[in-house]
Image (cartoon, rainbow, N blue to C red; front, side, top):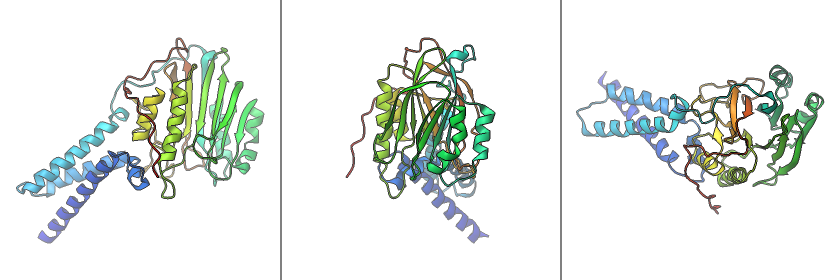
Length: 349
């Protein structure tokens, strides 16, 4: 019995130290993917750390000095994780205000979905469009095959932008409303396109729209180029004269160092703050699911409705939001939480 207790104590100590290390990693802004990856499962790590802390408090010997130090450090790590995550699970003021549907002419319904290039089960996605009847449909990872399968959307929507690619970075936009000033922009990589366009609502007012899909942190890629892509979008949004929406698969979580900078520069707002996590990936594994698909909006845009992420046949859940212009659409107010204005990171060799 004593042997079993000793093994349990050593295991708990090792697990607790690992939990603390993941927090230390997440405090850095390093370019290495194996450091940045710990940002993603922060909620899972926080819950696991809390469990380790509770078990350690029960089974470790409090009489030993190192135990008290270990528990204090682990408690600090848990509290830090809770501080970072609290906007998504505590009843804080929503960053994007709720707004009743009072003027349909100023309102638009947006569906954003990574369809997964290897996924050839199209009907569930088309059924999703049929059910929710969005005014705008943004599709990510659309290759030539997927674009052909989305022909019904070309019939349903009078305006569309299609940039199919065979490398997981194709992107299409289908709109019920007129589009103008459209650009396919390669912010950082010459094979990773983003969509920029201006949407004219039935009220005659215009909204600038960005559809993006930066690269994820992978062993084959440094993360700085993807960071720079997001921050270039942020700089363009910051200088916009119209309300702005940025949507897509960001391959990043809202509490990361880069996403904090993205919001600080762009002054865009995150609908998740004050509402919940709205995890979207991995769709097939709810335990490890994280929020990497986003819809960010400027201060002139408020939220009529946000659905829980929608399941179809992809490894991502789709986001569906009903948004509306509120008050004077030309007035832009910075989010209260974001006060810094950091510059772009230097490219590392």
